[in-house]
Image 1 (cartoon, rainbow, N blue to C red):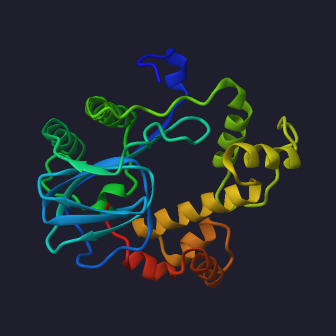
Image 2: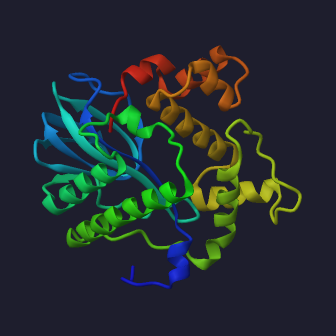
Length: 284
């Protein structure tokens, strides 16, 4: 990918800053369930972390940083482990993450660590420690506060990008022009409320249901129903790990009329009940 591309291409990126936290991990000495993680980085300030991803098991020791690829992984924390962590989502319109290839590795990165400490200080003013679940709780901000929050993460992201560049990790290529139709389709599907899972399209949409199903199969390897089901499962995993809602609230938000139906559906897809999955999750 060229080092520079037209500005309008970068503007098409969809981004969301998820958290910055610094604190002890909630569960130690047990392997987590398989959980979805966004791209990001964490620094081990105390203890040790083991990661299982991409068919490999990696150890991250004190003083090292782990650069996470988006996807599913399992982790294990030694007793008294303490992390400094940042998570975010940045993707092209078709859902391709900006950074994916070459990640899931541990190294030392003192410059990025200093930038992450500064980000934590600016976002959590006056606090020395903030846990994962507190960090991901929705915050109420003024317009100026929101703008400052965006600017602080953007300044950190500049250092993150430069760190990856020095490690010879490049962003994923932008989707070619001939994928504009699938980009539009994916963007519309991702905008649907999570409790609406019937594979229908609005009458004004340029594709019918059958053609849309074919387009997704061709470009993503899954049909409409599978795409929506995967999106709902990813959302279920994130909500359960974040532990912000009751089981009934999560079930209702995802389109289930009864919590028992949601539990059976979740167990069928993951092999675990929501409560067992939550207990086996934790900070990332």
